[in-house]
Length: 134
Image (cartoon, rainbow, N blue to C red; front, side, top):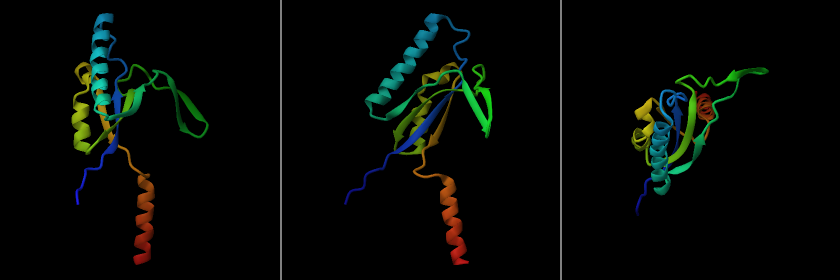
């Protein structure tokens, strides 16, 4: 019997929408070329599942019927884009994220596993099971 590693999906958030502000058009194109080459390597290795850049404008809903303009494009915390990748483990996903060329020019990458179901449902199920035992 052979066992094969199960791959999981991970979400990479790319933060900092203002990384290019002090660069020349040629420098911006050069850095975007590096990002595109990294994307093409992931896609060629069949690790890229989806994603892309996000517009630098939108709306934020904080409560029912409360809508404000945002995200704020100048913020280093604003999400510039995202990838969904496939990796064998969180550690492998982190290693993939470490190769992101955006890290060299001020972006950060947040790596999050995608869960097959909401964590809250797992907690509710565990609490119900505990009640039945006790």
